[in-house]
Structures are given as C-alpha cells and as structure tokens.
Length: 301
Ligand SMILES: Cc1cc2nc3c(=O)[nH]c(=O)nc-3n(C[C@H](O)[C@H](O)[C@H](O)COP(=O)(O)OP(=O)(O)OC[C@H]3O[C@@H](n4cnc5c(N)ncnc54)[C@H](O)[C@@H]3O)c2cc1C
Image (cartoon, rainbow, N blue to C red; front, side):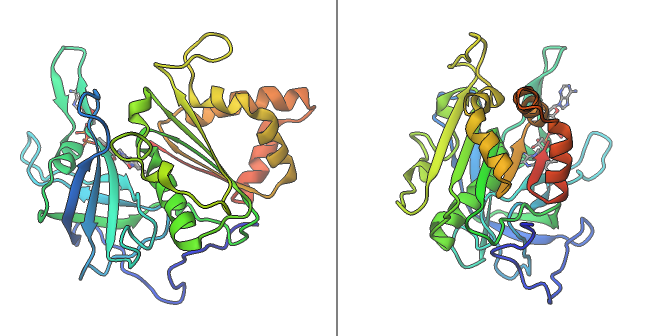
C-alpha cells in the first residue's frame, strides 16, 4: 500500500498549524504571468518567502490566504484556499519558499456585471516585497509512494496543475528518477493555457532525464475534437489510452492523482466504467478498493 511518502516532514516533530486568528506572514518574492498576454485568463505563478514563518507542508497540501480589506458588510475577508504548487522542498530546494498557481477568478454575472474574485485578484496583483497573511497547512496531503516502481498517473485541469507541478519537480529535481514512469494528463481550453508547458513558461516541458519515462497528454477543449467530433476533454484523452490505463489498474502498482475542476472525476468514471464493463468488471467496486489503498487521490474545487 503506497501510504509511505518521500519528502515527509519528520513525523516525530509537531509542526504548527496556523489558523486564521494566528496566521503566519509570507513575503512575496515574485509574481509572474503563466500565459501569453493575449490569453483571456490571467493565471500567475507567485513565489513567497517562508523565512522565519515556521511553516511546513507536505506535497499536495494547501494554504489559506487572507486578502486585506473588508466585504460590503464591513467584515474582514475570509480566507480562500490554494494548493501549494511547489514541492515540500520549495522552488529553492531549501524549504525557504512556497509557490502558488492562481487564476484571477472574474465572472460576468447573469446581470451583465463583472464580478471580481476577492482573493484571486488580491494574489494576482501582489508585488515583490508585499506581506501576506496565510494559514495552514490545510487538507490531505497528496503523497508520493515510497516505491519508485509505482506508476504515477496524474490528471489536472487548469490550476489543478499545482500539486502535479510539485510532484513532477520533485521527481526531476530531488528524487532524480521514477522507475515506474509517469502518465500526465492536462486539460484546458487552449494550448496557450498549458501551464508551465507553453511559450511563456515551459518549466515542465523542459524537464529532461532519460531515466524518467514521462508521457504527457493534452486535451484542449476549444482546439481539439474527440473521436465523436465533440470537444476534447481530459476524460476523452484518457479514453484514447484506456487500454494502457486498464493494464496499470489491473497490475495494481499505481498511484493516481486528480486535481482541478469539480466534475473531472465523474467524467473519468464514465470512461473507465464503460471499458470495465467490456472486461466484465465493475469499476465503482474496483475504485472503492483503490481508494482504501490510497491509490486513488482526488482534490477538486
Ligand atoms: C482545496 C482547494 C484548492 C484550491 N486551489 C486553487 C489553486 O491552486 N489555484 C486557484 O486559482 N484556485 C484554487 N482554489 C480556488 C480558490 O480557493 C478560490 O475559490 C478562487 O480563487 C476564487 O476566490 P476569490 O476570492 O477570487 O473569488 P470570490 O470572491 O470568492 O468569488 C467566487 C467567484 O464568484 C464570482 N462572483 C462573486 N460575486 C458574484 C455575483 N454576485 N454574481 C456572479 N458571480 C459572482 C467571482 O467572480 C468569482 O469567480 C482552490 C480551492 C480549494 C477548495
């Protein structure tokens, strides 16, 4: 059962968990756009200094950010949650930094008014040197198994790439090998929104280590069509490789992680269920078992 982890914080030590009443302060080191100027969405990579904060997290956890200011009733803003996009060792490799991948969440309401997301705008507008109140670490960790022979199956849409970036950077920069291989699926609207894999920031695509076998599969719904001529979503891309996935599931030595928009897991269930029934298997029963074994890990929002 892959419930041991690489990169674990010392289990014998207790690390503080910062609550909204007693947050820690993180200082902005950099805030850079992850997509081209003409891209309709603004998505940013923000790196914070953790120095003197006492904060620790493990891969896959999130932090809370408390935006400054008040709501229209004069109450302080409540925290919003963001998945940490750097491995537990940070972008600096020394646990002194933490990074987030944040999309400016603006919506045009049914009334035609532009509603600006409170906290995402606060984060996307941060400048170097700004100090930010943070809580955490929050949420279940998405832990890598200790057994490097494990096949990793990573599925992310949009900013759901945050914990996957942490995994992939950890594998290439720290662990330096992953013998079981990695199948990484990324879904978005357009190729220029392939976060960390586009012309503005190609950090993930630039990783190169012949000892690590990573296959990356893209599903861009506005630019690609599936076999039925419909928009290509991430589950359709998985469907194209269903025989490989089925083989991995049957073999049993895999760890699968899903992060991103709600609904991604249901889409995946449909595709796997349909194939499982051709094999005389009941996918939902199989999934229950994989969940118990911590092989099926989901963080959606
Ligand atoms: C576990 C977890 C991890 C997450 N990780 C990430 C991450 O890594 N990156 C990331 O970008 N996000 C992440 N999120 C989402 C994040 O927590 C916030 O929900 C998101 O940034 C929006 O918050 P906000 O304060 O900007 O928007 P809010 O102010 O909370 O508004 C929410 C949305 O409603 C819209 N809205 C507000 N008022 C109206 C209205 N009257 N009519 C119509 N629409 C309206 C806003 O435009 C906005 O889109 C995560 C969430 C969870 C639960």
